[in-house]
Length: 310
Image 1 (cartoon, helix red, strand yellow):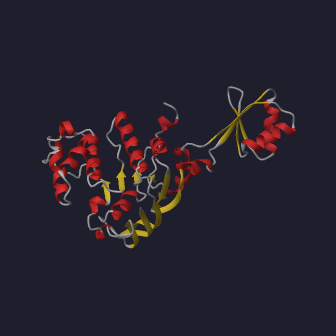
Image 2 (image 1 turned 60 degrees about the horizontal axis):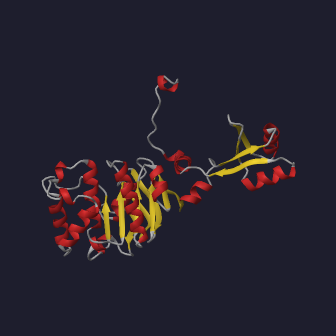
Image 3 (image 1 turned 135 degrees about the vertical axis):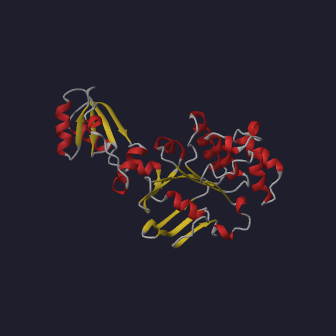
């Protein structure tokens, strides 16, 4: 388990993490989400003892990282894929780590096979592609068979098959009872991978919840309604109840502000025949953008040409 309590980090006048508290539970993949500059990487570094908090605590299984007797056996992390001596082979890198914790050679062979690097284990890491470096970093995180794992953008540089492999790996690790914390900017991938999310902005906690709960409470959710006839009349009735309606090109209505049960009850009361009544949850990306709209530090601007559709 990972626990952050009142975690705060200042760099001079810059408040990178601000009174942040959350829990990463065993048996769950927790997505760690936030805009660029929100404090995700800084938080992960504090959990791993690489940065000291200005205030608050970050613990793994109830202890600070520096107090763990055999840290590789309790927590593994991929924070920077290229944090490897370029002159060492993949195998030599893992052997160096294994020697610090009495990890046997067979475990090195196991993780190399698991991440798909067994055939290139003797190649220098400096010659690896970004994706291969990611795989070696994952192998290092898994080396001590820890119960707690942290991954910062683990799918960077991977092709679609590699991304799917990471997704399946993370979910299988959680099913084994491990606590898995993973950050990513790929919302569609997080929607397929994570069970719960911790969303931060400007170093502060915005939400700590399940993906289903996060998307269900977004204002972007809507209901598709298709009636037998006179959709305009039913749209007017819905708007009288406080709903917002949009007439789609195929004749359906997109309704926001009323749930499917209330829409069905209104149709029944007015004798309107429904051909479709389909609620749609917001996507994780839509819910995330809505939550973090006021927390984005770096906004891009479209050029006039692009804004005009050129």
